[in-house]
Image (cartoon, rainbow, N blue to C red; front, side, top):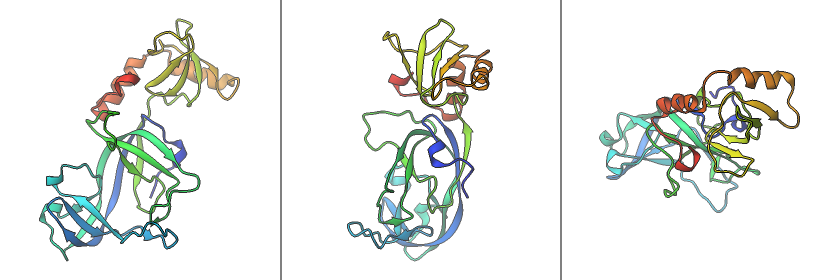
Length: 241
């Protein structure tokens, strides 16, 4: 079961609560670092000639020191080949680092083929561009019955690409919660509230402009950042602050 948000509605900065019902499966193999189980939700893609998936998925043991949102019950470290177990996602808070879209959908060897991925980070993890594989990817509309709840969206009253003027009359483009571009070419920073909506797909409607004005009549960029940091236990990447 997925929530009402479609994949294109997610955006960087979103704080999400993930859960997936624990489902029966069987252990197919065990090493020091991984436990392989039959994956109960996805199917083999018979048309993916270059990628042949074996219907299994390897989950890390504590020794591997890898972050994985899917877990087993009993714990991975207690399992041996042939054991019955459950696999699912306990309630887990993550934050979206990036949204990737695929047209046509991506060929992975599994069905359904993903049309998008959310790249998420765990609580306490700040994005580091020097780590190539830091994020964990999930298909928000895939075959795994992941329940996704939008916990908090910083700057929920703005849409990506909005242009605003701040209290000092400085004009900005909003590209993500921690990704602002000033039009004056000066050193980047953050806008000073209240904000006035200048452009949203052309001239904004009076209602849209009023909503932004009311939302920023009190508070500040720092307040949005503080709320986000309390939930994520993280900070935006250095160049986004």
